[in-house]
Image: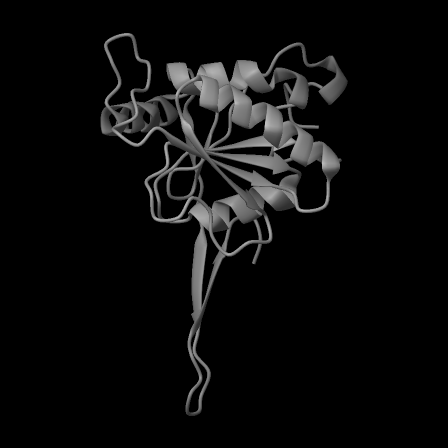
Length: 193
């Protein structure tokens, strides 16, 4: 385990939030660069003096759900109810779909599944400058930090601005094949190649 890390069963409450801005995951700030990233996101979204994130106009959340886990679908229902009660429009997508949220701006994207669903959510939202929060329904949970019992607490912290962003490098590759009619193919990767 990482130094200072606790086992999943020892967690009393979620202490880190992961999301993405370009190629970033939200995480509780422990250093100045992460705090600066939070400040930039808050300024972009119009945070108030209390630091709470005030989404600029759209109030739109995307839920990306593991395509085969019934627990993920049940959790998506719970998540959608919370966000709708908070005044947000909710879009749902299975992790195996081609896009999420249409062309509308997103305030947050929520990944409901395991690390694979988190990676797919990052790919679906690449370039949209939206934080991604991973909710762990998998076995490893290396990329997804929030456990289902703490879902609403994590959402409250997102809306209040109580999170920081952790920048992550991403790889974007375009494959061009020789020959007539060969369209270039674009691939985006985080934590994988």
